[in-house]
Amino acid sequence: MSGPRLLINKFFFLIIYFLLGYYGLKGLIINYYENEVIELDVNNADFTNQKKYSTINFKDVKLGRLVAYEFTDNNKVDLVYSLIPESIPEESIPLTQALIKIENVDSDCLDGDCEEKYISKFEGICYSVLDEMDTTYINEIKEYGISISKNAVLINISEKSREWYWNLLMCLGLLFGFIILKSFFIKANSITDWLNKVSHQDELKNRT
Image (cartoon, rainbow, N blue to C red; front, side, top):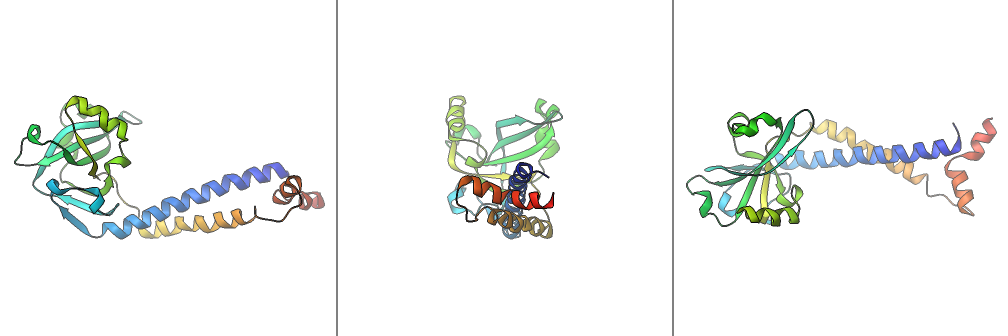
């Protein structure tokens, strides 16, 4: 293997290992927080008072408007609805404090039966609404009479966490990533000398 090719491979695996480690660490955090189900009043839903990735259960609520959707592969769609108190008409609510997201459902249900087919309970992993929608979009949909708090709680009922042992295994990617990263921090007299050392040019020449 040539020196430049070896250097490219180092960068490639460095990125792969750190990505694996990142998603493994995120998965472990979700595993930790999801064990406790928190019952939340939709009238007092405020993400600043919640722990990200915790499991939230809303009671005495109903679906409001479809506030966002995004088409994915194979004729599937992700949907976000507002959540409102069961006993209050949506038009009398000045500001939406909670939303619910379902992912990767058949886009045919947009004709009107998404709710019946895919939403059986109002419980899911907690996120900030700003994780799913940027501020610009939130401001734009106000023109359609949909006002969403920037501190609104969004629950994803489709997201299922990986088992903890898979997440732990993925975290090993961080270890391998740091080993590769360490190989870049070597003493050199110049950039050319550093490139030669990082790509093991001398070692490769001796082998040939």
